[in-house]
Image (tube, rainbow, N blue to C red; front, side, top):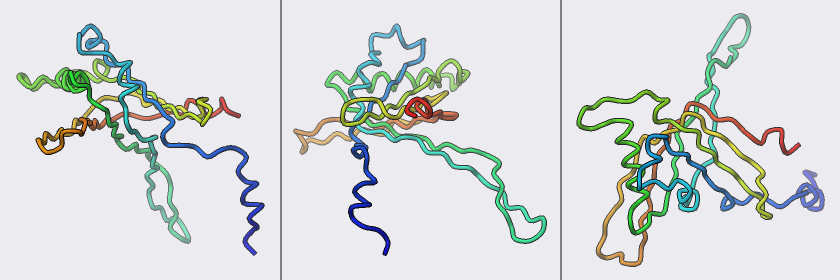
Length: 180
């Protein structure tokens, strides 16, 4: 017998985590702080969806004697997508347009050094009592893509949502030892 229902139910000592209990903190680069279009605090409240980042360990097959074994040699981190509600004044769109324009000026096609445009992005997960239970920092994060925003005369009640893809160097779990 695989197990009883009572054993299964007793394995849940706390409530289950809810994907809707999160926030994202995005400090914008220093150069954009003086700009009238920037209010990064509002980005926290406008972020509709996000992902907790993943990590993959790349392996190399090695055969010395016997079966082929896998050995790790590299950690890789996937880009993350954040989706934002856009206000009627389009400030969120202006902000990310300005950020990408700061990274690469279209007129000169020059790129800045990463330390000039990258930031540390924080994603927090909360429990049903609004206590932070998980937190990750994404280091050297910066936007690499802003998806198009469709315009449509037939959809008068819809709101604009903007998807922004961020690249980052690595992430660290800030809550790894704080909850134990």
